Image (cartoon, rainbow, N blue to C red; front, top):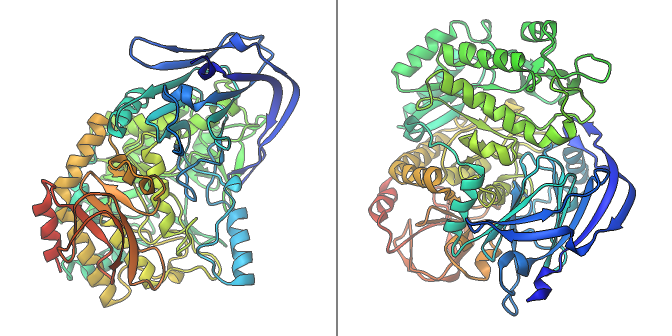
Length: 640
């Protein structure tokens, strides 16, 4: 089939600008020369391990743009079946779309919830009122986790082995466009099933370690403002029979109050005013079976002592004039640790080992990693444009090394927001970032489902979201119904952790009302009842690369399964369809062809679309009738 070998290559010479404002980037490319390459400049060969490698033969070094157009029949190894549509997934974490067919994708790590996006949303809100189902143009999207990897519905993956900027073009049926900024090999592997394909992808990119056992014994509650506030809230929820396994206090190191809200003071030692005698409190909570978790990121507050030490020793990322490169995050500037400086690396890692693990922390949010500016100067002399996408992986590696060197791998974990291909082997858990405290399909509760599934199809199989969301701005505040629906969804996920939000006083909290406390208890008790099932899924993810939360097509080769983005499989045997509309008491659910048991009524259903009652406390969940775990699932029905 000689037509399968019609790969076109255009060579280009150019330079790029990536102006950044608060983590959001512009993409400006200046092309000075361009020409078609010889047809024989590209090879597509198989290795002994049945890995196909797409290579561009060495070219004159002046060329630094490579535009490939590749027939998907070549990648799949066979012609597309007549009438079938090819679907594309992955490229990291995509929130507003799951199937990327018809889209162009930029692989460039950035702040997903940037100020421009939020301002535009609030402007439209003021003009038209809330529009939760209003789609945002995919061409405007930016993402915390960007990866040059995609998976096709035809059961192959493609991975470009580069940390630089990559572009994918899925707009022309039968072809994939690939833009590279360096001559990098592109790997393709095929499989008979998605489970097999995930295994092959994990062998290339790595996999996550299982979580510590204690994570599954209850909820991790986001509580701030000191030990007294923590004790008060713990007492309230435990009186209702809620299993609490952890407290996550992101302000353990202090806080600052800004126009954006209640924010962390980025000085990586415990704040003795806000958390007096914190190590002693941590020991006390631990005796009660409750772990303490904190927060850290690669920035430092420039008015505090941690930064004073870093700048005195030359540990910060520099600007062109040799000064510390200060980046504005929301309303304040901060300096960034230079992860290419070995001394800075060891010092920052030491902060984690001594000031966090050393006083008893069992975990933390390892935030950020997206903000490396391309006009900075690094200690190593490396090009920051080429290192930008890999910066989150370096940050995750530093955190992992600190835990390993402290001998705490079975007890301590961290969760990251930013990521790239290298992140997979270093980070045990992602979270989906700063969702809005609303019902919007692109930014609110619903958005975490396609985001999680796209990560799954990129090779990252263990993810969770902030219960209740994070971003409160203007009229966008969290109500009780949203909080409870989010608790229901996350009770069928790898981890349950709440977030107070950036403006806690304006967004309702989990303990605001007695009915909310009872609802939280119900959801957490169901979550803990799934412990054995979840740990089995974790082991499969760690050993085989099979994601815990999966798209429906992962096990069901049906047209509708390839298009569904607001339902998911938790393992092989549970189908979850969260309620994603405000005020809804029922939901239409698509069931793949199988025998399913409705979890709450015991009714047996077959494949197709059905309407399901979904009162508070009972989002639509189904289990396979033939599941070997059905006794565990039936027990969930009895938890009231």
